[in-house]
Structures are given as structure tokens and as C-alpha cells.
Length: 303
Image 1 (cartoon, rainbow, N blue to C red):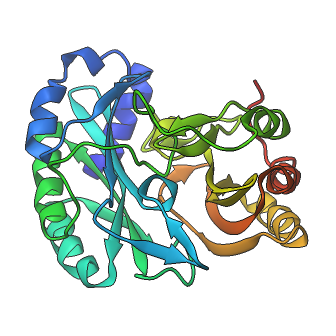
Image 2: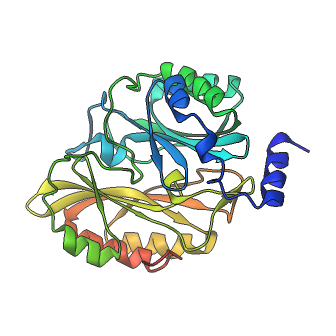
């Protein structure tokens, strides 16, 4: 039996939920090993935002802010005496191979590598990583991998493409956020001037027998970047089962929203999930109504 299979079996036998061992992990040491501190989120998840603040990216004339579509992240979830780490690293083309070499040589997996956007310059790739073991050791491996890129580690900042804890005094969002909340049926958060939504699926998602919470990338991610006069650019990804892919794609395209990628992020999750990324810029409320038609085809958790 493989090591990951043994961890899954132990988790199932113990009925483990992840929160019992969270207090036993020295997250300060994990942050030190990684080279950047994170935040402890509800459910015992330790998450580190890795925005590419060093990149100046444009797409269709829109300046893509780090928190909008360039927000890498790593999240650690306790698993008994060990931890599972998942993450999404934002990389330029020349950084992909050096980072992958370090991830694999350190015993972690690369579970996906792909684009999220189209036509963005400079072009960015997104590397999804996963591993289990001692969290400090995992953090050291990931620090070595990130050091093979130009990802900023020293400076703190907001910027996960999935909804995270917002900074204390973020810039005001120049949009009718109340109307957007009503339309999408969720409450958005201000992450560095980007309006972000994280809408969980109704059913639990598991990897190696462990529930993967929405904060580790299993929520519908919708981001609005204000462009002035009530307009916005939107991007993000819908987290879909196989039967939801076709109707959601049709809903987006029928409403003028471009589907920019369709792929996996994980490789052993239950249920099997597909991630559909999108892009558009227009009147923000109009875009929200279009996104609502897609959400209606997804088994999301309603408040």
C-alpha cells in the first residue's frame, strides 16, 4: 500500500476532520521555513498568499492586478501527525521547469500545469502542487522551488486568486457591491481593491480521504476588478462535476463571457472535478447576471 493510501486509510478509520491536530502544529516554524508567514483560517488551514506583485501584466488593455489573477497561494491542512499541502504557483514561462525540478526532487507532486488566461502579456502559467508529510519539511521544499522563480517572498501583501482574509484598509471598490452580492447570492470581500467571491460546492470534496475545504481551492472563485463608471473585468474559475461542464460553458458563452481554460487542478479528488476559467469586461451588474446563469447550473451551497 502506498504512503498516501495509508494516510487516507488512517484518516477514514479515525474519522479525522482536520481540526483536532491544527493546534499542535507550529505554524510559525512553517512560515519561517517557507520564507513568508501565512494566516490561520477557520478549520485549522494555514494559508500563505503569494501574489506576483513583481509582474506588470496587461490583458485586452486592462492592467491585471495581482489579487485579480496573479495570486499564487499555498495552504497546509493537518492530517494527524502530518499535513497535506496544496497550492497554485503563478509562474512565467521561463520559471516553469526550474520550479518543477525543485518540487519533484523534494518529493512533492505537480498535479496540474496550465494557463488560466489568454492573450495576457507577459504570459503566465499556473502550477498546482500537492504533498503530504512534515509541514516544516514541505515548506522547505516549497521555499527551494519558489526561490527558482522571482516570486516575492519578503514583502507581505494581499493577493490570492481565491478569496482570503482581506487587508485591514484595502482601497475602496468603485462598484455597486450590494447589487453584485444580491445577484450572485453571496457576500463578496475586498481583497486589495478586488471584489472576490468564494462560493462552496454543496457536497464535500475529498483528497486522500481528507475533506479539502473551500479555502484550499474547491470554491467557485469569482473576481471583479473595477475599471471605472460601473464597469469591471471578471475572471476566476468554476469548480464543476462532469455533468455540469457543458451547461456552464454554454451559459457563459451565450452571455458573452470567454471560456479561457478547462482542466483539472487535482488528480485524486472525489468527486472528480473540472475547473473552468473565464474572462470578460463590461458593466459589472450585467456581468454578475451572466455569471448567475452559470451558477444556476452548479450544485453550490446556498447561504
